[in-house]
Length: 205
Length: 298
Image 1 (spheres, helix red, strand yellow):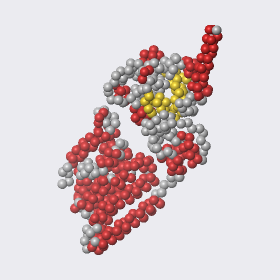
Image 2 (tube, chains in turn brown, cyan):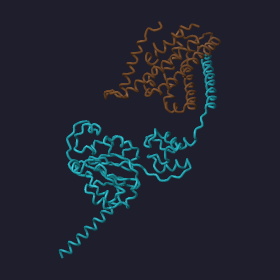
Image 3 (cartoon, one colour):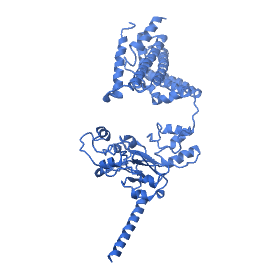
Image 4 (cartoon, helix red, strand yellow):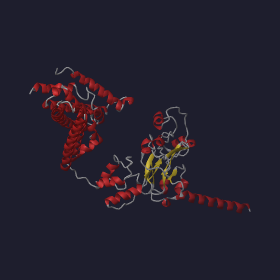
């Protein structure tokens, strides 16, 4: 196992090619649930969990089930790859349901704070995006690397949304010009944050 | 081709079965006991989700009722019937429910206002309030109808430059209360079909009020002297204390007759019992005067 490669993959997806700030995936919760730091962090944790489990399970489905059925029946490993999207979405939806039940049982305040955003993780494109990236990238073709990539993606999402929430909490106390109040300043901050993350470009190559 | 379809179906079916089992087991393991009365209460609420009760929506209110953070009669839209239905779910009696309805603390029609200036700006109360020069009274209704805009039930209309509430259509949701930039609209408990209100919000001394409006409250405290438990004058402005306000009959009639500014106004049912009585008395007084005049002439 190449430990250096794992670190490279992790840093790569968490900072350099951050799913939100460089990949522009998962913008909806990034702007929607980033009003308070604790809520944003909770959302980040939920997404990290879902993304990691989904990443691993989808890897298993593609490399295990699809390849096995493909080779056994069609003598072509990629014969069932067209089912990827359907299968991935099903995995993600199931995992979100699981997280929802878990939170409702053990963290009711967090569950209530999320409200509609929790079921919306289902349609969080960062998760489907990460699963599809894992499937595409040559370095994530073994399970541990795939899990690292998925977990890194979740950590990157948590990092981005928490930083965003911290900035937005401060914006509440600043003198924002009237036309920019609300959504306007949030978009500007998101853009500048994204530019700042461009500074990581080049690391790990 | 057929085998591809067949195996695609088989593979997906297997996956679905796997996840369904997983979720089924999780549901059993992670089941949360929820009070069955919460959905039952939610069922009888109007589902308007207007937030008039002060909670985030009907389901939030239902939860608050079960947890005894809210009254059964807390839904302003549903009124008495909803309160009874909620009480039935909970197995308690309704004490007394009063619908909260808006009244407007400014009774000045267009012709009553003084110092009205031609205004070419944006036709909205919020904007005009910022500009602040459209009329002399800085407390009174601006008359651009932000409240009318805010009403989802078509219960507010501008008549003679002031908003009139259609109490048949009004649900008491409170959208107009929030819309008024001068905080002129207040929701009061309607203990009867119509309620007495001081239709003025001007806190200036009498002379300044007279300078800006023909029908402003001058803070003379006459009403307070006549019925101290119901009326109180604070900051040169009379208020009605609705805790002590019981019924129209128990009000001292004199207050209405003697109020020099005539700002005592009824809001609600347009068919006032009180006005009938007043009209009757007025007619009798005229009759007497006529008789007296006839007596002197003959």
